[in-house]
Length: 194
Image 1 (tube, rainbow, N blue to C red):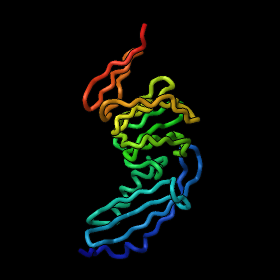
Image 2 (image 1 turned 90 degrees about the horizontal axis):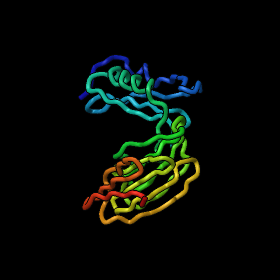
Image 3 (image 1 turned 180 degrees about the vertical axis):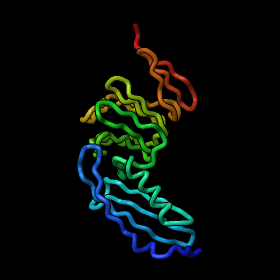
Image 4 (image 1 turned 135 degrees about the vertical axis):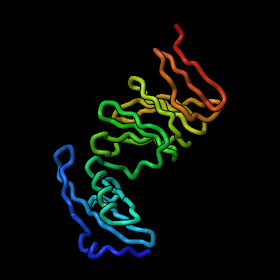
């Protein structure tokens, strides 16, 4: 379906320069393409191939409606990482570091302010949301039934890998100094002997 909005192509591409939360100037390219079903506006940070802002919005009726959606997002988005795969669970943050597990089985530690990779660890099984940060320990469960315990911080350190009886889909619960850990088959209560 062709849309009859005269002269919209003369308004694109747009090259805004914005200041991020840290006061750095960042340059973007915002462009629009008309397809058979409507308009797609894309925004990307100039000169960034892997880390950086990339976004697209669609509108059936107008390139300006899609552009408004991009600009709404542009003002809130601080960074994005293309090294992190699809994420099903909630990331956790401590001391300026963000920990996130992806369904490709990788735990990523990112600088929360910039999105820069600090380290990553392969668990070799999909991580569906099983992350818990307790003190200086990061607990990460995967679909293969492995609970990996990593030390939180800028230097990656694997403290333990525990083979459970079944897949781990939900995060452990910390109650006092004990953990409740659910696999697909059982619920475990783990506590230090007193």
